[in-house]
Length: 561
Image (cartoon, rainbow, N blue to C red):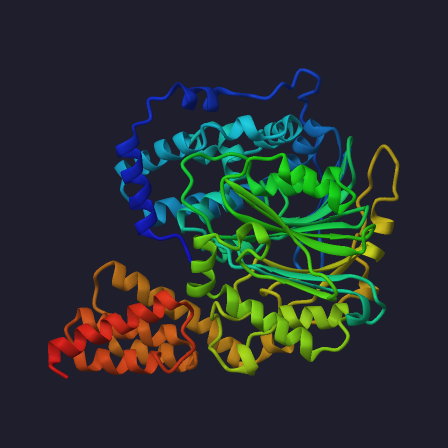
């Protein structure tokens, strides 16, 4: 998974200047509000039960012992939005700050920030036309609790509406490489009881703060099916979830052209699927009816159909992929359906990215485990090694567990069971939830209660208590410090590079960062040595490999080797 880059910010600034944005469409977008005439806008009274528990009439929020928040709300769209906002307002502000403060970090220039805001207004000008009216009403209710800190970016409602496309926009600005997720399913004679088991990691990274406060949300809408999802403050869309019909959805980013206009955020497509579909056929029909603006694989599992499929959507194409005469299905970040066989960008992505590598690693681990259980699925999600158990360095994007995931999740749809990871990364306990019991309460006033089933908890990964893990955490901090120093054009103590490599010796990146710095300082022979060591490691992508080779060729020309 690649982070936001200055190159992308410069790109959109150039696009803005070249395009011009005096379009009336922007004004319509910024001033549009949903039809809320049928709803009461009265804010619910939030009662503080304890420092980790809050309640309103139609919902509650508890912090579980693993440190994640459990949210339960019910009602019409406005009630859902208002209750969610009231209960999660501190988490909402924290996450909004985590996302939007990235802009200040990456674009310190006020002029460029202004250009960026104008570009995003232009880019999102048609989003409101492509979103379900009920979801817009829910977002409107939620926006009452948006942070006042970011009024300069946009008014609360359009701002929060746009943030529901953060996954898609980040995906687009990084040429669809911001999110590198891994998903798999097993069933039939591949599982212990023959029932469907699905596992996935969401490697969406927007900083450590963003991943601190996961919300496991249980939503009981006035219309449609009750469902659960793993989310964060301010997010009403779905990236991983299951409804009470045993239908599951997760999303994996694909590869497509840079879009010039936002349409339906993929998380709201999957939200609609969870809320209104109970079968794969219904899920496909909903997905097919939407206009999206990035390419995405929607991994759908169904208790009723007892099967899984990939719904592969993009702005100009649509495909469905399912396996025949097999009992496993694997998905990383490239498309597999017939509709994309001749897609040049997809083929290039398979060749150049780490998607195919992770795909093969999942296949390898599934073959090594004759019978998949929820515990085995969690073990696969936590796996940190490369193909053939090769040590490829901690945090390598070729690993299934890149030690940066927002969450890992395992579903058992036919039993309505789900397990959700707790921090750090996927190494904490996987907390179990049983939708059979959670959505049974029908009282008008909902009382706070424990939602997790402690008897089904999957134990912590002992790796988090090792010296190796402590070294990796130190590596991340030191890497960030070095990169910040380089950005500020200050001198770096060369000993810090050695310390960085010592903390994570099998990761190619420590040697590459050192080599690049030494090259820029004119220490060509020392840089060459670092690049040569990097080449002995498992380099993440073909582009990274070619970049290192280019540095080596330039150095050899300079020193006549």
